[in-house]
Image (cartoon, rainbow, N blue to C red; front, side, top):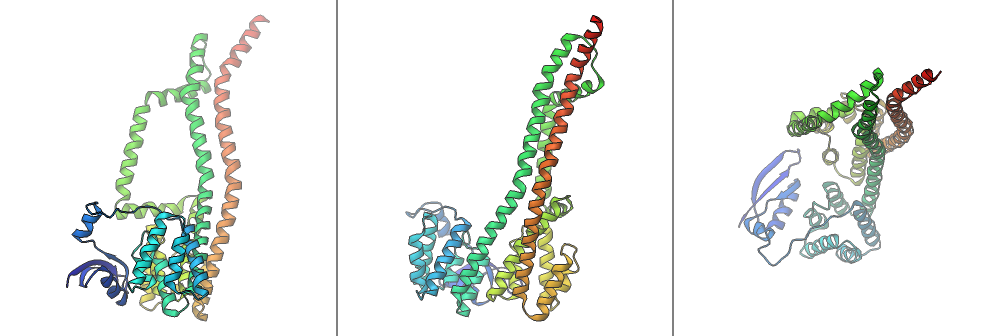
Length: 411
């Protein structure tokens, strides 16, 4: 029997890199899931690699599936399962309704695996590029509990809320980036093109320039004369930044610095925890073990500083300590959130309390983003007005001075 090489995490979250004797990759996957392993990755054999290179007749399929498409899939599947349609026919019917050809192909392969005897969760786990650990774990729990229809509806709600949160994040960042870029373009246009034109005119007058005008002209000279050096410095700075942030320590310091940014730091924190607790509440509500839920939810966090904190809390929970007690060790959690979590632990209603925490963070994000937009707009407009006004006054000051001198000569 061939040995199948794999990577996976055991129940304690430890990464296992080993091999297992199994007839094929599907059988290996079944055996590893039965052991309680998660995040399973079956390493490809030489034959698989040859197929990937296109040396067989089968053409590799590539594509992208939007989160909204997955939410629609979950909701349609839930409707059919709750109506009594068996899972094979339900997935098959939904795959025929999907307009995304790549997604339809993935679902057809899922149907094939179900026909071969795999449960839905294991069939979906073979397509991690489409269905993440959260989705697969919840489907697995739904299968074991016999509440697959309800779990699919929860998944659809979760994905739709995640999409809304992403839109809020994009809207919070889009306006400042747009106005900031416009600010920079106007500044460079004035410095590189407008000021040199005025300087030529001033030189033809032969008059002594005011100090303010000299300062603006010197700024233009500095940028024009050292443009290559400035660009080179920025390129080197970018390369150094990329090298440093590829190291664990550098990336940790960079991610930790996000929380010290005025105004944007608190918003960033709230957005991270809004997504984390949303995932956590959905998993716990579906019946996923709290330790596994914390682990999967932490995987949705991209900030290494926060992920490290969540991993420490997970380790403490494994050792029998309280979730809320460990939250108190870190100043990133508001006191209200810690209290709400403690109440959930005492009452045994963690899923409901995590849902309330999610609502709290979502409300905070909505309020902060709305207030941020109303604050940033006038600040950026006033800043742009001051910059343009300063340069205009500096450029026209010599003209006003010369016009005044000419009037005095005539008098």
